[in-house]
Length: 254
Image (cartoon, rainbow, N blue to C red; front, top):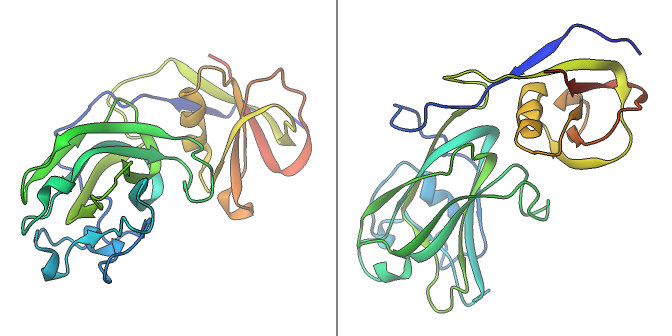
C-alpha cells in the first residue's frame, strides 16, 4: 500500500434554481406501487403533458392494492443534485386526489435498499388544481438517483400523475468553492470495518460528495463501478486498511 498525492476537491452547488436545465426524467425507467387498468408508470415521463387519463398519457395507481401507501418513482440512472420536480395533475376529473404527497430522493433504489440515503425534496400540503402543474423546489443539496412521489395513507385516493419533470445538475457542477479535500490515503486497499453507508455504481467524485454530506464521515472506500455492484463505502473510523487490489481508500486532508 502506498500514499499518493491524488486529491478530490468537493464543492457544494451554490447556484440553486432558475437554470435552463434538461428534463432528467424524460423516458427514464419508472416503477409504481400498483397499476390501474393498464395506465403504467412510464406514461408520466413520456414528454406528453396531456392531462386526460383517457389520452393514455398518465400513470394511475390502484389504491385497492395497497390503500395505506401509493407511490411512483423514476430512476435518473446517475446521482445528481436534484433542484426541482414538476408534477402535472389530471384535468379530466378527480383532481382532488393529488393532495398531501411527498417527493423523496434516494441514492439507492428504495425497492431494494430499505430507504438507504432517503432525503425529502418537498412535502406538498394541499391539493394540486385540475390539470395544473406545480414546480417544487428541493431542499438545498438534495442529492440522489431515484425520485419517488409518495402518498402515505392514500385511502380511496389513488396516485395519478400525468407528467413528472426532474431538473438538476451533476454533483461536480459547482458555482462556488469548498474547503474540503479528500486525499488518496491507500491504493490497492480497503478499510474493512465501521461503514456508515454503502452505495452502488457510483464513481469517486460522487462518493466524495456523499461523504461530504454526512457529518460523521471522514473517509471512504472506492472502486470502479465496473468491478461490482457496491462501489462506495462511507467510513467514520481511524483507518487501518487491508490490501485489496480493486479498492482505494480516500480520507479528508483539509
